[in-house]
Image 1 (spheres, rainbow, N blue to C red):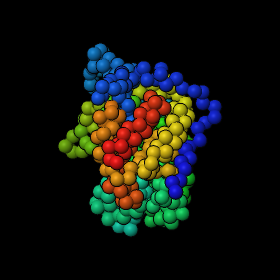
Image 2: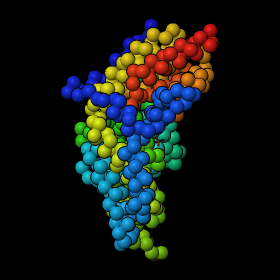
Image 3: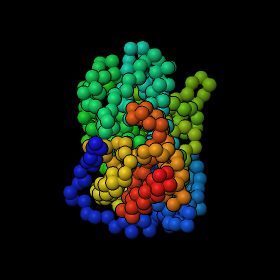
Image 4: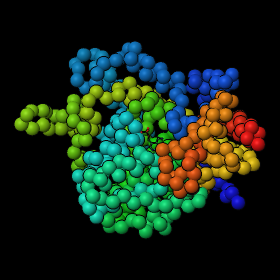
Length: 420
Ligand code: PMP
């Protein structure tokens, strides 16, 4: 029997959200595909961008474009102000204590690689362990595998149950004084599972490990409160939170960031360079070698403004209701099995349909103007766990509606009819 999806309880105080007003801010949602208004259900891969973000990037290039930090001229001051202003916004959004703890990176992948190479690699050796879970995105597996190859440390993965939830007892059993780093996804992109991250942080700290949380799938869906989470590192991708691609944030505790050597060398990360020896810039510059993605940071700042104006708690409440509706709609389709039915879930509906390959489903839905993702979702160990080559994933965002989910359910019925 299929187990019921119980989704995360939304905050009771959140006032309702005006989805028509939200949708009107996203120009791409007015596009037609296959002669119909697009039904975009692939926000876990990347979110669409509100007009304010598009305009912020254009405005930067039109009126303020210059390199940061190096110039005395007006434009360089403006660019620096815009870039550092975006860092301030990231700081406030994450609840960080200090903007210098917010390192601009290309995205969550680069954030995790930075920690693996600059924090883990110099500290690890044979006998040390890194603990992840089976539900990680490849970006939170492969950087640790590389660090293990380089140091002789061992990577362990905590298992998940049939609903796609972390098996807590097994996770605890894998924690020991050998565990130096715990790296866990806050919300899974393939299953939607929201992990008990506070408990994970406490348990990790209990054995003396440092804890990194991968927040790529959280920033546009659930509030993030770093002091409350208590983790050591947290990383997000701008493009999954209504911002541009190629920009993200790695937040780290100052003491950790200060203890780490630079990862990449080049301009901007130095204090003074000579052939006798080079000294490095203070945080955050030490980890931002080369000309950064200035316009990307500006766009991310605008995306954070959009999130703040809309209210992440209101988004969480709205998506909770949408997820429940979609779960009901899809569960009613004969032969459809949801993959990922954990008690705490966010905006992902992964599924398989008896007798039809996920790629065929995706292609047929595309002909109906419905954009979903099919494949392993960069989480092959999740697919292995469920014995599947792939799933279809419909992922939700604040601009989706019940009508989108009706269209999806109707499209799947059409697939069933074609394959009957
Ligand atoms: N972690 C998770 C959970 C993700 O969903 C993704 C992107 N799908 C990443 C990490 C990597 O993010 P990016 O590709 O933006 O670096």
